[in-house]
Picture (cartoon, helix red, strand yellow):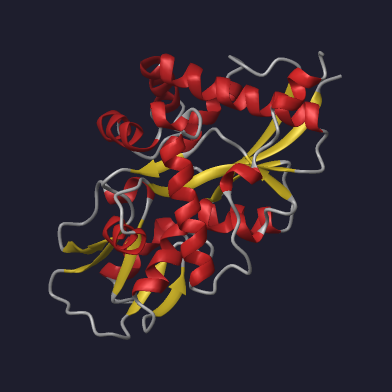
Length: 287
């Protein structure tokens, strides 16, 4: 009987691309993954309540749940000179207490935005509703994420890049940590190691078969954008750097967690290397 693993990922193109080699049966073996596609803030909240075995999360959420969940090394999305965008109407001038729509309280872009704009009046919306809220003057501005950063209404302009806020805070041009994955620590260690290996393999297979997988996702209407935008978006957020965390990405995560602690958002500093599944356990068992 197949082991059932409940996994959550967002419906944006990079998460779907990095997961669907499993959904299509290309990798996975005797593990039965039951996947749910949910907006990132819903996933963050579910992760905080330990409702899924494995979940995509905003990296900014992780220090709030690290005692119950380990951080996976794979399926990661970082910005390198790009990322979420604070957008407003071209005709509007923002005051200090401008009203803004963000995609969720626990997202990385919300963390950085709140540090940069402490007087802004924040409302939270599903990321698909933010552009409309700006156009209809429900808010003065909004932070666009996912594919929305590539194609928004021509009456809007970028007020500020979240990437620029990030660089100002960490004093270096480290990659911007956006999204990753976590796994319940209650899962037996040998199984957790195997699950991480499967998810890593899924990303590797997806990248190796990018044209075919992209075509299949588009044909099944699993992606919200056309082929051209999909390819560009995947180049940004689902690429070779998504396979497994590098030393520079780990340094960036440590910087994010330190900034959050220094700003009073996290109760303690955590170090990324301490948060992983100890994969060396698998080799020790064979000695």
